[in-house]
Length: 258
Image (cartoon, rainbow, N blue to C red; front, side, top):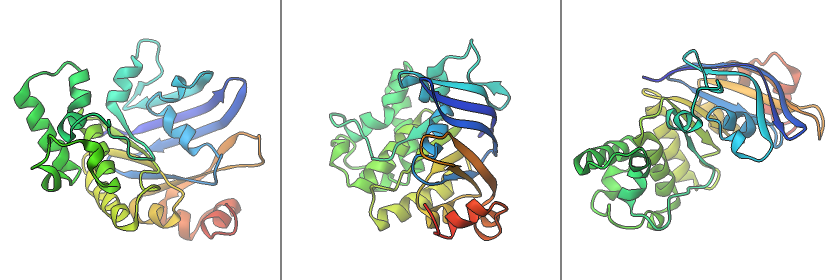
């Protein structure tokens, strides 16, 4: 079952540099939340804290509380690897494992988790590829290299790989920025379908995309270069785009800056 996230009093650092400060945000289950804002404002940094990827970066650390269904993801007894199984991630550029087949790409995470049963892996691969709306296109070439697919197919393969381990939350960091318009539309349609089962957070620079796919939108900004990014405003997407409270939000979504 999809679960929601609660972000409370979060500050994010790279070494001594505070990259993002004072983020308070609730991400509703089984919905799509878009993070928007100009480059360098911290939206991807915040996204990476949600599955503890930020701390992989040397000097990366987080203050505050990030909870999934009441469980503090940064508690001392919580395994970061377990967090990343529960909170999956799809990156900006499609990144299938280049030496692996389509099938092996999808089940890679399951094998890492110790699952070896061939029937179980086959069922998971088919379920995940169907969930990523890719099964009909690849079912007859599962033993072919994943890197041989088109860019849009590769991104859907990466989504299939992410959902194969049955996460509760799916993070997407500009998943369409490297894709053509037709592939982008396919990913957006897929996001709409996936939110029935997953809590989705997407970072996008594309205002039209945020308006199309998200239920809620969070606008991040920074006062000046070298200053920490901040969450300026969050609300229902239609409200953010049509009746934002903050002047900076209105300026950004209308294209007057950023």
